Image (tube, rainbow, N blue to C red):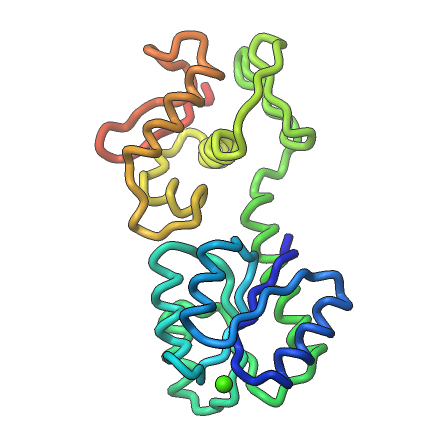
Length: 229
Ligand code: CA
């Protein structure tokens, strides 16, 4: 769900108008008046989506998209007065998800935000069934509860996301870069060392013998595979 929106925009009037309208819809708003402030806010405040102006006093918005995309898949909607196709293409190629041209109606912007919201939900909710049972392991996605031999085990949010990702792709190899992208939201930059650390702690919790795993198998040099049979 999108709840925290970062607005990077140097025009006070537009900032005030957007802030008012978005707050009225229940979103919480962070604002930044220039690119550096925006990047800092993105790094420290963990927003759910970025609304980005392209013409900023200290840098071009496309530069911000590039920097953010090195570390995150957060949705970015461009809100810009530039209406040339070439500007839109440059922003989308750099990794923006959508483009709204000024002057815009708040109704349209809200609808675009909802589209992003649905995309995020679809990604998270790619497990259709509610309760999985594999041998002695029970995963109740609805209640976020995991049982090993009917004893509940507690996973951290990252361990839980890892497990769900593997189950959603059960029988298939999930590569290190897929894992870092899906679980941490990074691109190709994810490091396999931290994945290994989280995978080891997940195994200790759900495997009866983590040195000889029943469920989470290592595909050396490639990734991991959830064995469902
Ligand atoms: Ca501007």
